[in-house]
Image 1 (spheres, rainbow, N blue to C red):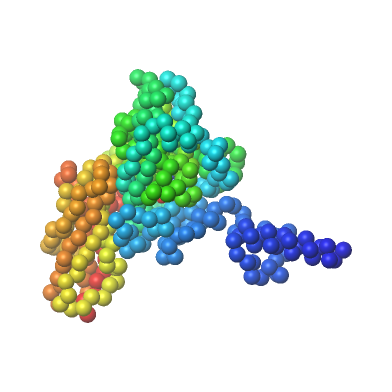
Image 2: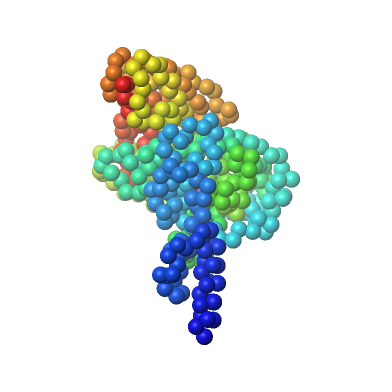
Length: 407
Ligand SMILES: Nc1nc2c(c(=O)[nH]1)N[C@H]1C(S)=C(S)[C@@H](COP(=O)(O)O)O[C@H]1N2
Ligand SMILES: [Mo]
């Protein structure tokens, strides 16, 4: 009897170790029938392949940000892409059976496509697209607002490949009364209640029909990583990344503003009129965030760098401006008293971030802060320390500031 029990325990432990992907070191102390925490949901794989310096803000659901200096690549690689999940990554994704359905009150017909249909029946497009979480920068608000305390790192610009959403919507047929689209993804509600949708957002039909709005199956020339929406994702550059639905299976063409979870209440909304910091007006005084504001990040050097006196420092970073382009970028080493113009590149395509560089010299040894400030083509610049406070802590586009010591 004892032998059989031991045998079962041993084979169970090796099965557990296999699904955890590594040995359970103190397995001998684990009670019989115990389920390791690491197996409680499928999300244990979320950090697989991520850079070890990524910062975990929350593990249920996963919210993981990229330190500014890790954003240095021209195109964000998968291992340095921030993660923002609202629920649990879908379990058992079967790509052969995966379909995308276009439907809704304002769709003339219902159409369902397999991945193979999408890849062969429509023209394929590739764009670099900037995705920034609406809550990026929340940690900079005073008074503090609740939610994940993102600093600078809820931003990415990868190269996405897929078909234009427009081509699919036109294939299904768009009725004259269409005003919005809404996405549905396969992720699981944290309550695990079957069929409960965790997030279903969308954009006005005009944004949905733009050239760069993609239904993508590839990121940086490879399958989209599971945590970023494999096997299919809506990608809408320049707007809060919450409208870029991961694990996409359905798009509804709506005859009203989409009303899925996280479209209603105060989610991804800011007060229509400026409010005094700390004041939270009623729901009907909020508007949905659309294009993200102008912003930039310093990706080299890392904050806290020690630089030899007399050396010229070559700074670099990226800048972006929602639906607009960045016109100019300036840097300051004297808390914004004077500004020096940086060299700014054109974007690879519309809605891609832009790279900038600046050579700076410091007058003497000591502590400095380097500030970067972008200005968009509408003439709007980033605020230096804190923009208009809002109750949910969205769209903080204040200047990125790093510390530098000249030694
Ligand atoms: N299905 C689904 N799509 C989603 C989310 C989600 O939780 N589920 N999170 C959204 C939010 S709030 C953001 S900021 C981006 C994050 O994308 P990333 O994790 O690939 O960086 O995905 C968006 N798309
Ligand atoms: Mo987000």
